[in-house]
Image (cartoon, rainbow, N blue to C red; front, top):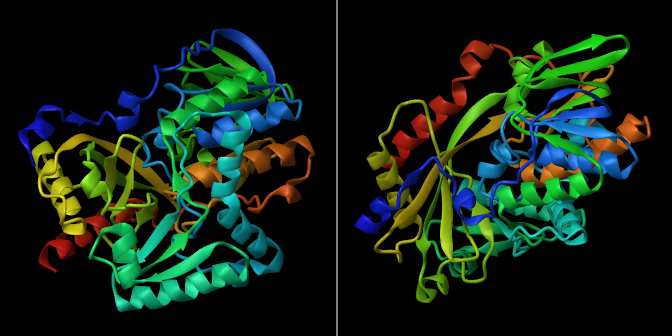
Length: 432
């Protein structure tokens, strides 16, 4: 790794924060006010929910502890993937039955397209590129699994094609993979710009957005929910919690319902045209199925953006930079002198099923959470659907059946499992 990469190293400051427009100046909550519905959290889930509620005629306020896109949404890799992490469509249909299984399959399969459609309809400038999402296979077992998965998606009318090893080498530019599914409806974008653009459309629709206003208490009083936050309080008929992992701090019923997976995201300097013609030459993005997973895409300037799982055992900045460079070299041997310009940490909040969840916490409190690393597109759609369900008082409009939250069994130990599994995968990747 060159010295230039070390000099420009900005630890824990995302690429998006350095290449996007300035932070939007939404004021903090002050005094007392009211709304039909209060949304807690200004990531994609909260912004989508609030925007669509306002479009349906509801009075809506968003309360955010920091700034728009400051959570998992704004520091993610910006991938839109129309695929399950673990399941095949047939497994979902078998587990949830025809009605809810079909709805969930359709949600996952159409979410990126719905996200791109919203971006286009609302004129949101966020470097959105619908150039496909790849799921590559690294061994024969995964190859067989992905061939079946591609067939199942295609049978259900989705644009999923399986490519052979030679085709994948040409399309991805990596010798690490023996085949891959390409989902044509997938792609990538700048997630922070998506959040900022969606917040502007929400504000135009009448949503009041209060930033730097962390919520301290939610109580039911005089037939209203009172949301107490730094600077003031809001009375509302309903509350929607969209703080992802932070939901656990907002209501006792949501404690022990999500698991943290720390992720290291990083970006190289802009690659020269000769390398871009050989590495992801037609664009696209991918996340593989290795235990110590690898993901890659470009930004508009030709920076290669990748990621690796983090874990609890401390690694120095120097070691992380070396690991990031080695991972790129391992997957793309053509890149000889790797300069890492940006590296930052994020958190993917998981549940045991690795499926999106909507919880009905109380009669008037709902929660969208557990992005499982696929929240950008999925949560845009879940927010839209939850808005329609609440505006029409019909929870059957959802693709994900609202359920009562239940704590993860053995949570004291379970919360460390993602980190321990990634540490094991890291060690195995070094000796394989």
